[in-house]
Length: 88
Image 1 (cartoon, helix red, strand yellow):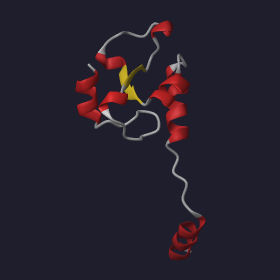
Image 2 (cartoon, helix red, strand yellow; image 1 turned 180 degrees about the vertical axis):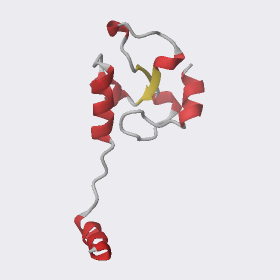
Image 3 (cartoon, rainbow, N blue to C red; image 1 turned 45 degrees about the horizontal axis):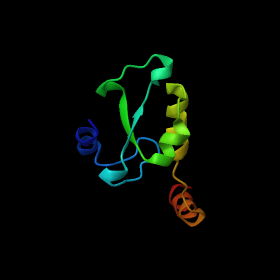
């Protein structure tokens, strides 16, 4: 299961988007088993170990919020000013 999913997503953590080695792969149930989620490939996501631990058995909506929070890209101030000058 893990190998197939790893090949499909290219070793990218569902939450933080970081790439990790196949040996570091953990399976995350998006809808936790403790919340009635199924134990099948439709409910799996790959996660790095720190993100998997942080997500724990959070409800699905909170896992999505966690992913969105972790994937926010911070643009350096210098690049912002160049962007603003182009469009002001």
